[in-house]
Amino acid sequence: MSSKMIDGTAIADRVRKEVTAEVAALTTPPGLATVLVGDDPASAIYVRNKRKRCIEAGMHDLHRHLPADITQDAAADVIDELAVDPAVTGILLQLPLPPHLDAAALIDRIPPHKDVDGLTEASAGRLALGRPGLRPCTPAGVLILLDESGTELAGANAVVVGRSDLVGKPMAHLLLQRDATVTVCHSRTRDLQDICGRADVLVVAAGVPELIEADAVKTGATVIDVGIHRTPQGLCGDVHSAVRGVAGALTPVPGGVGPMTIAMLLRNTVTAAAMRATAPATKGR
Ligand code: NAP
Image (cartoon, rainbow, N blue to C red; front, side, top):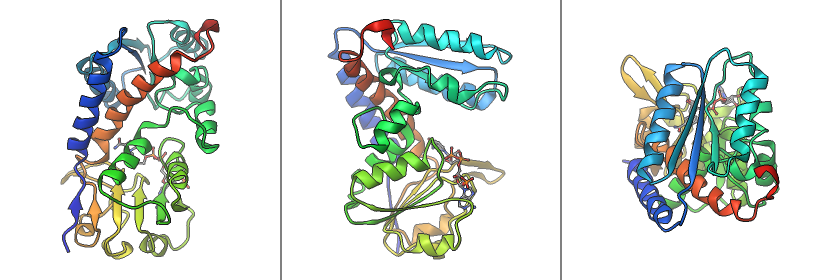
């Protein structure tokens, strides 16, 4: 059996076109503030791509590059400034931060209506309670890929491998809200391959190259590979390439989940612009 490939690049292009049209219809274009701390080359590339796509969509690019040795207080001051700046619609703090900084404390200074990465305590709480709010970009993008692939979620056995705050946990909540029966696996899970083998929908975000082998996938399942790894042989995901012969539908690496993450950041920034209208006026927070 040959799996249908879920074309994340094409779907992300379409989302970005929709966002560009929505931005053009606004009287004031939204402003996305990206905050990069230090000079980690991978983070610098991610931020550069986000800024490029933000400009292409007609948004204002409001970038802050902070020194690697910035203090917690000074970094907090920058976030607070952006929080009250009326030109800033969304704030993205690029992770990971240098180890001396408390990332969670800085993230929680972002007002929920500017939290375009959906990572604040407030946004996570809203998601867990099924209330409206900004959702983390990668799992929100995965949900669109699942819908585009025609995968039925209501009543499906969905397995999420990984329980990070960035991907696994919000993914599980989003699937639960769509009436899937959700199992979350992690590094202490016993019989991982067995559990995955019962999934109609399998989302893998473990950060382990080719963790999921072909015999751990149910024939015809929809498989979303969030992982991305650079190896001497090229890029690979958390799902072994042999799964292509078993899954009904599958995301490629690259060209699957990756492009959706930036598209959803732009989508969230437009949503944040609409939320601003109803956000508390005091100090922009
Ligand atoms: P993370 O914070 O390192 O979390 C990994 C999760 O996987 C943890 O919950 C961990 O369990 C679990 N895990 C690790 N080894 C496992 C194993 N052998 N069996 C079962 N579970 C295992 O990573 P993340 O931020 O969620 O990202 C996951 C992957 O997605 C990475 O490869 C990352 O590069 C990629 N990613 C891609 C995008 C994109 O846009 N394409 C976006 C975000 C992330 P414990 O909790 O027990 O440690």
